[in-house]
Image (cartoon, rainbow, N blue to C red; front, side, top):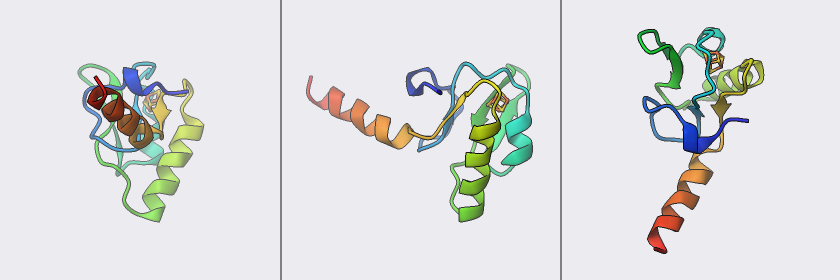
Length: 90
Ligand code: SF4
């Protein structure tokens, strides 16, 4: 299961993200090429664009199921909200 707190820095904000468990296999970019990308210099994947259409959501959810190391998360919006709430109570 992907860890929101360990997400890659290049992810755009939103529900979906890739974390540091990524091994840069590239499978997800074949399944969801409009949303998932790999940084070949540093060798990691990231969400470059959050999905906006049903087709893109279907593709990125398929990528989650096919990631060999469970590095793609889909709970970013929920956890971001919890993170913001924690910060506001300090
Ligand atoms: S499928 Fe998983 S391990 Fe492979 S590049 Fe995508 S996020 Fe990284």
